[in-house]
Length: 174
Image (cartoon, rainbow, N blue to C red; front, side, top):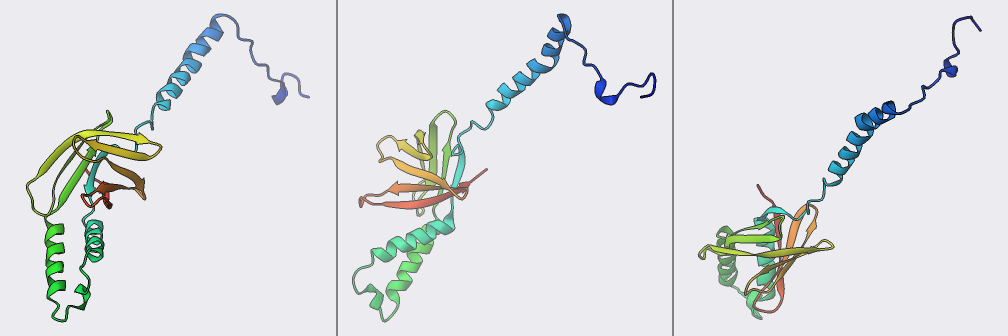
């Protein structure tokens, strides 16, 4: 070994005592702890919150499916095509004149605004809850609707007067 040159592995770590240790804690450890606590709160926002707009393409497919199941017996044997033309006109008109937006707020309140088939605009307020990824939306005087997120879209099962339900797809809006 050369004189005056220390071996690289023989360096000494100075002993930290008293004020030096306190300064180290206050300069490094406390800010790190604060950062961890701050970041720990991030990501806590429910993924359902925000504004959701009706996906009109999916809505049209659902309406067509629903109407096909409600066709009277023998309607598909329409030799003139009048029944099919009438149904097509009805579906197209309904879809074109239907708009719906659902807003789910962080505080558990919600609003639903829209028109259905060209009727007068409707505005509803209510509450919503999330139970393990299934949300329940409740508007006073209405049956609750339930929904889940799949592939980035909100799928809501809307009850109807016949006693069954229609699934509607909503995409995240602005």
